[in-house]
Length: 71
Image (cartoon, rainbow, N blue to C red; front, side, top):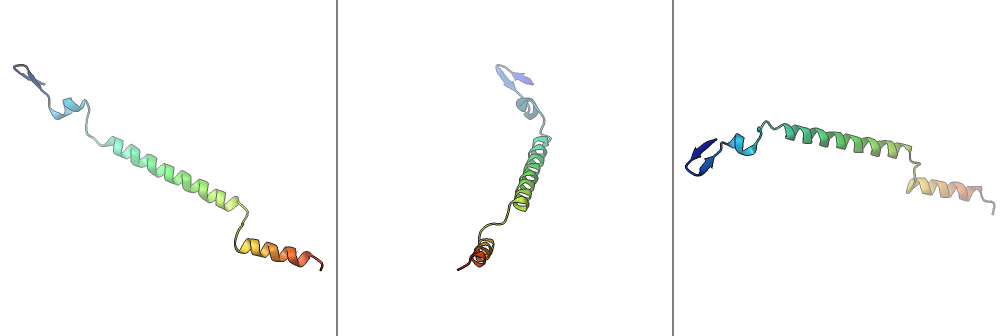
């Protein structure tokens, strides 16, 4: 810190009150990657354990039910 008359001059590091190492960037990147992995795991396990519905599954179910009825 340097004083010139009434003015106070600070260098960049003193003005920021910290260092510019970029650590926050890596914390945010790591958090984002972990969040994506967690969401993918939830989505994949949910899709794997949910019974199949819609489209061909419903058509097959309707055909089986119709074949089981006696006219």
